[in-house]
Image (tube, rainbow, N blue to C red):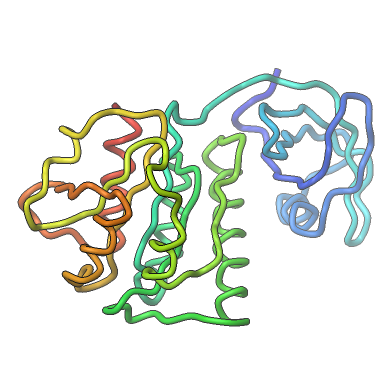
Amino acid sequence: MSSRSTPRLHVSAPLAAGSSLPLPPGPSRHAQVLRLQPGDAVTLFNGDGGEWEARIVRMGRSEVDVQVERHEPVDRELPIDVTLAVGMPANERMDWLVEKATELGVAAIQPLVCERSVLRLSGERAQKKVAHWTAVAVGASEQCGRTRVPRVEPVRALAGWCAALPPGGAGLRAVLSLQHAQPLAALPAAGAALFLSGPEGGLTAAEEALARQAGFRAASLGPRVLRAETAPLAALALLGLR
């Protein structure tokens, strides 16, 4: 039976009992850093659901081969599909947000550039950041026991992203607001939720109006002003516990 103390490795490949495969470069480096040896047990997951028991069969200088043994149909995901759309906080705060949101069970993260954003990304730099945040999500999923890795969507400008949302989408849409907002806990429960929060300084009045036109309901997390990286995590924790 799989043990939570066994090293967990994410692989983007089909898995089947009895198959052998080389680990991708990232998991291979992880196995080597842990000084694993042939015969040592590892747990694999690929996002298709559950985990796979496996064993190291070969440790090369840079390659690691494993034998897949048995599937464990575990499920540690939230009962609600939550997407966080966030005005990206600057510096390492976005890394921290992605890591902690993954641990809390987020399904997807949509990085946004807003009018008051300090961090502004586009082109190749944005693509590299998304790849980096995806790697952060993979590492957090390996550590916390998740069987799926949340999606990190391409960076978008908030106005264009709002305009592209399908009208009347299923589930709850909520935007963090200090104006005429209901407590998030009082909004109706749903099987999916899309939560929008702004960057440092929050959303402008015009951006909030765009969100409301796209079907978002104004929501409050209480009387205190939370940081840009704290507010979406508080919302995720609240939605996930409902």
